[in-house]
Amino acid sequence: MIIEQFEASLREKGISLNEQQLDQFEKYYETLVEWNEKMNLTAITDKEDVYLKHFYDSITASFHFDFTKPFHLCDVGAGAGFPSIPLKIVFPDIQVTIVDSLNKRISFLNHLANVLHLENVHFIHDRAETFGVNPAYRESFDVVTARAVARMSVLSELCLPLVKVGGHFIAMKAAHANDELEMGQKAITTLGGKVEEVFTFTLPMEESERNILIIKKDKLTPKKYPRKPGTPGKTPIE
Image (cartoon, rainbow, N blue to C red; front, side):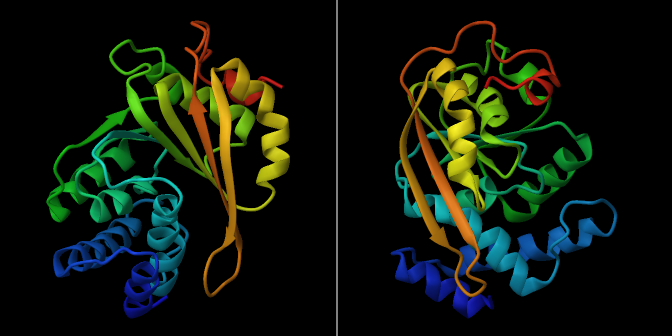
């Protein structure tokens, strides 16, 4: 996806990027590739692939959920900033907190935020399990996102404790999301969530399947969740 296609595809969805935003995406790409030589941030470095599989793919969340109003978003395990930083570029009024377990990635994100002149972004080095029991953050976010971090039964335990009641957890998945959802249904319910909508579509050009699962938090998460680091992955709620 060349830049012109990126811009045109977003315009078709009602998103018009200005020169500053296009420049931010360009600098994002350059910074990502530069830092990727020193640390493993992404296996995808070809420019057209980064624009399609990272930038455009991240923004697809906004095709199915309203990002135009200001809210506080937490991105769990965002790695090199996906999906929250592309969403922040397109919708600058949202406030973003990224939690990631690798300090090197936090260093990259801090540098990136300076390069892109992003405001109201916070990067926290922590495991999602310990972050989720911290009273300063627990059940305090309007929206929590995660993109391809873990299967739904595990991911729900990492993300739903952070969502405030009435807020949303948006899981971005590739293929087989419905199978994952079936396996993860018990975890979602146990943690206070309810599946609101599931959107399935294909990424343009390469036609690979994508799924966006929107889960509403309608009850408080029981105090015992999330469990200790590593436990959700080893013994998921199923």
